Length: 111
Length: 110
Image 1 (tube, rainbow over the protein chains, first blue to last red):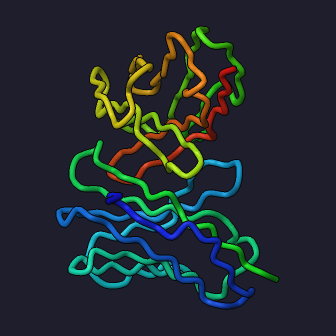
Image 2 (image 1 turned 120 degrees about the vertical axis):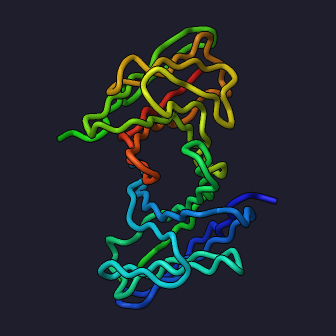
């Protein structure tokens, strides 16, 4: 079982819709959760992090964490073609070296 | 403020050649990391340095060595390159848990 799992996609949504990206993790002791956006041929860029159960909003982005279900999600409201990228979920299980990345979900926003 | 910089951007090596990938950060971060990214495999940690003067192995250290030259610089060396080391290499730094990535080096070993 992979430590951090994401559906590889592609997830296609029309422009203006809500995109929902999901991530599950296996280590119940995980404390910190991150979402990175990676455009094709570019490096990952941090867009959100969440430490506590519940929702965290930042502009059009909302991260949702449910530790009991070992599930973290990213919602993108009013999706734009510029949001088309691969979204990486990352989970920290303690210590600087313990950040595990998922393989990413490719999002396509159709104009 | 350049963030994290990496050189070179692209490199082609023949099997058995050696090279060093350079990384520098200007954010005064204590921790630095080297990852490789392969299709379908995600980002995998090669080595990390929690602070100046310390380095530790990550998930896939075989075939690599690192040097934390000072707080700013963290280099990755391939002593005898193999085709299996063809990948995109990212350096990252962090002052807490959030990591910030450099632009990457695309390495091809023939």
